[in-house]
Image 1 (cartoon, rainbow, N blue to C red):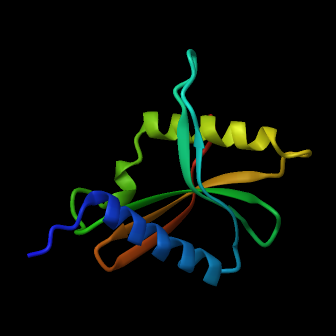
Image 2 (cartoon, rainbow, N blue to C red):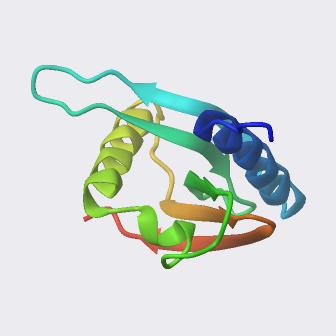
Length: 124
């Protein structure tokens, strides 16, 4: 059979997640926003930065897995990953003249099943 790389699964998952969010009225602001790690910063990356209909900026982590199991894809967003997402989000917000309300969503894709978790965690 054809070996599908994790990166390829991620790219397809991201495209599916993006299409799903666009269909729900969100607007794409930026894809794959990256913050380089510095001497005191861990760096970070946000798969999708979207704007919701009410103006909320939505930072989306896409978790794609070929099969469901082990609590599913959503369960794989651990605390350290959340921290790096929050860090990247703060860097992104610095470029906004007036930082909008924002939230962190997770789009979990397990095989053919897609779950959109809004406000999956808070920026503590």
